[in-house]
Image 1: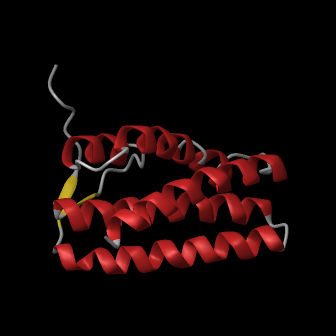
Image 2: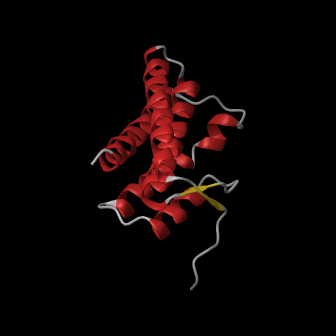
Image 3: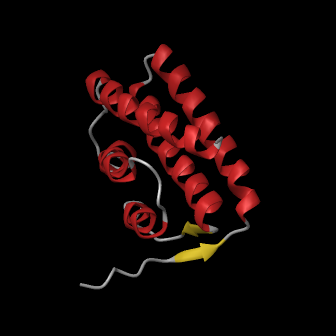
Length: 136
């Protein structure tokens, strides 16, 4: 079975720091939204944190970034291009985070506190692991 082709672009590896900065800001905004009990904002910032830290990993270790319209494509792209400790386990968590994006952003339901807290926990685990990999 051949690997599915996804849309990517080459990026100078030094630009990973810009994506890391974005991830850090989304992470802090997630925490602020949680403290303010803004559950939709907390959930969406958790998702964006995971997307940006994924971009940072791909840029630093692969010199590429996903431009696929499906955010979940980044999971396959990372699997195909990165050889990091625990990556398979971490990518299953990333997929769970990314699966919440449309629900939070476009669905007519309101993201509950329980949903937000769970998504934030998953995002924090992924963010913490990825940040450690980036700063080695």
